[in-house]
Each structure stands twice: as structure tokens, then as C-alpha cells.
Length: 138
Image (cartoon, rainbow, N blue to C red; front, top):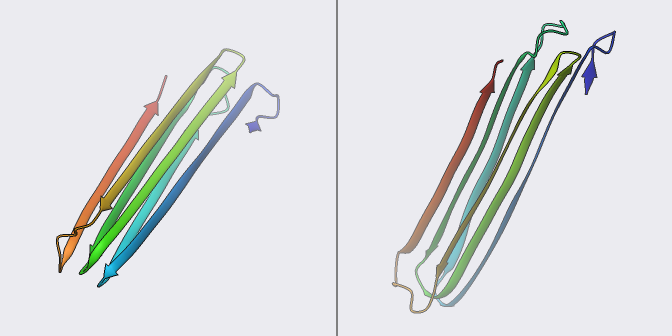
């Protein structure tokens, strides 16, 4: 939180996110494996000119990208699960008014490969990309 010298303008912004990944593989013969990648990205900015009459400009971007591959050449089972949840919030308060922006995303990805696997060179690929952007300019 920040304020000007006369406490006429106060601004706040915050963001948080959580990425959870889990995987398991069990091969009866040959090999099976799970490869996972996950990325959460957040960007926020606020510009206010210091005047109590200016509610400023706010921008937010929140993105998540998940991908996983189940690979192998044997018989057995494999499971991959991923989840990302994130949120952002921004506020500007002046003696003349207020401006607030909030956004949140949640994305899950799950894949399973089980007996009988397709055999040599079995592969299961999946991915998800989601993004939000907003601009607040009174």
C-alpha cells in the first residue's frame, strides 16, 4: 500500500498463485513416465498522477500454461495431474472516488494411460493455456 504525503491518494495491489503437480507411473514390463511443465505468470501496474481528482490507470495480466506427456514403451499405468489457481487485485482511493480491479483464473489438467497400454512408443500429450488481461482507465 502506498499513499501520497497528504493521504489524499492511497493505492494497493496484490497477487498470489499456486501451482500443484503430481504424477505416478508403474510399469509391469518396459518403461512408463510422466513429464510435466507448468507456469503461472502475473503482471500488474498502476499509474496515478498524484492529484486527488485522478483515479489513474490500472492494468492486469494473469496467465497459466500447463503441459504434460505420458511416455513409455511398456505395459502398466501412468497418471499426471496439474492445477493452477491465481488471483490479482488492485485499488486506488482518493477523496473523490475509488477504482478497483480484480481477476482470477483456475485451470486443471489430468491424463491417464492404463493397461493395456498401446505398446511400444505409447505417448499421450495434453496442454492448456489460459490468460486474462484487463485495463481500467476512468
